Image (cartoon, rainbow, N blue to C red):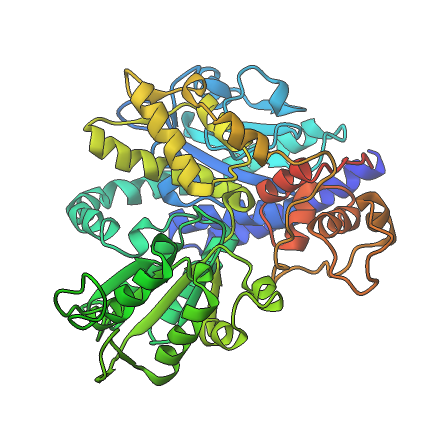
Length: 535
């Protein structure tokens, strides 16, 4: 036994002991299985653990648990005997080990979970000679010649967890009548204005959802920022409908849709005869929102002259109608949104600094879709469910269509994705959307591509990141500009390269250093044009 094999065996014994402890003290079988998959990723460098179980009636394999994915993402995923790598195990009852999974023609990757260049291991879960399901994992580094040893280890794990797979199935079967009873309430909750339309499980979106929950309790002014099409209005809706003002009025206005003279009248109202055409007095949007919430979209587009008038209302909490002399005291919670860089506008004298500080009490920044690409499958399903309701038929994406969607840069964000899916749904006769129906607008596709070596705008550093500054090698690889200030913040590209260097160029380990998922860092390696080194 060589040194590498001995080291691997030692770590496997430690993992088996840990898994044995989890199984021995477990009371909640489904939660225990999720903990086992989590342990394999953290301690065993076996990422993307998945457990699929054989359905008692249909005989199909249905995905029961997958580390890093919500239960809602798994419900519709199943494999018939002989279908894909997992279906072949159901058919043959034999383990499967592939050195580079993307090269195998049976590889389907319906969950978009696995990295194509890495190995893949899947083994049957048996109890009493009967196949109960399949355990699948992916080593987080390229094949090092020890794939067979890892297969035997995963087979041992499958034997250990077999009883808990049966218990987990029994729990889910017992809970089905209760789930069916609760489904109408769940359906109603999903369609309430608010969190029901906020979709995503990426770390960056979970932080946004936490901010929304916290800020909804109070009457603080909120500035929602993000590119066009990222869902700023949905965030505003969620804040209002989960706040103490939810029963009050909710008034919305897009500031970019009106010229300045009409905007003043629309927001503040006017008295009869205030200007030509003012044949009667009229309340403005601020008055309409009294006791509730006013949402002003595209606040960065208002003129400097109007900014001064708006600032007075926000400071004093009172206004006068156009052409009126009576002061109205109001109780309005303000939510504002913009896609513009207000800091740049302030520096350029285009946006008042005092208004900026008045609005920016609680900023919420929405990431573009390209920076949370792992959310795309769930967002696509949510949009298709809504489109299917309108078309009165079920709509479904094939694996090829999903892969096509994952390859696009999405400069128009969720709004562009929605338009793309609606176009595909209209073109689909059966309701099944395959890759050939995914038509990306060529202008948007060109504008979404970056020149070779170009990097996207840097994200804020992840709170959990342990990589603060790039190494000298990372700076050289990034092609740093000689004119850059020495104290400048490292770019997104530099941070990713620094993490990869520290992790020995293993993407899954670098992801943990940066507080990302493996899929997030794989996407950055692609769009930032980072050349992976083989160590």
